[in-house]
Length: 222
Image (cartoon, rainbow, N blue to C red; front, side):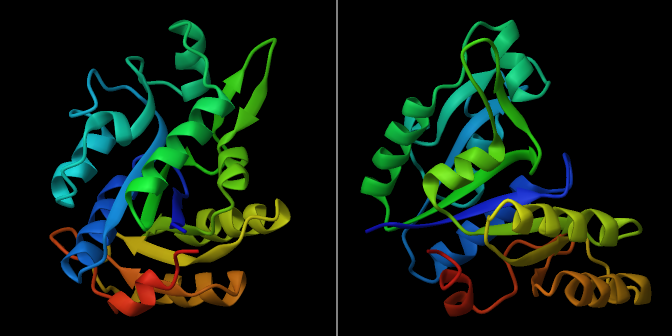
């Protein structure tokens, strides 16, 4: 049976897609057959030009677009609003169907979230659900991607606490935009101390692989 791992972040534009691509690329280079899935992307004209297309190319997956993504929206707004404007509501059944397809194709699947953990996906007269509901539907543990610099302690720890309150298991953090400054090192120490979750890897601007033990990374998938 396929195993999965959900990648969320402390907000938008903190490098979640870049880190996801490095994670998958690293594991694939160590011989693990890792797939990718994302429920919804807004603000892209095509799958190839989207986050899913970037990960597909960068990580060397080479998968067909219809197996990477369920919903694609033109408007660069929250998925729930893009879905409303474009008259294309997100359906739970579609996500579960596509999840079954990708897990049938790969023994390990990395699922990328949209924005931060509090991201509404649908809000209309028929249904309301958020990104956290998708994590629950798929029964996945998560990694939290956070930036290295000033302000990250608050965002990282609050995200972990929120997920704990919602019963969503967190495996740890990956810290992006890392330069190794004394402040960043202390940020990592405080994130681990306050959240009681480990920082599993750090990512610098020019990294092309994730510098972490592959066996430890694959063990995060459940």
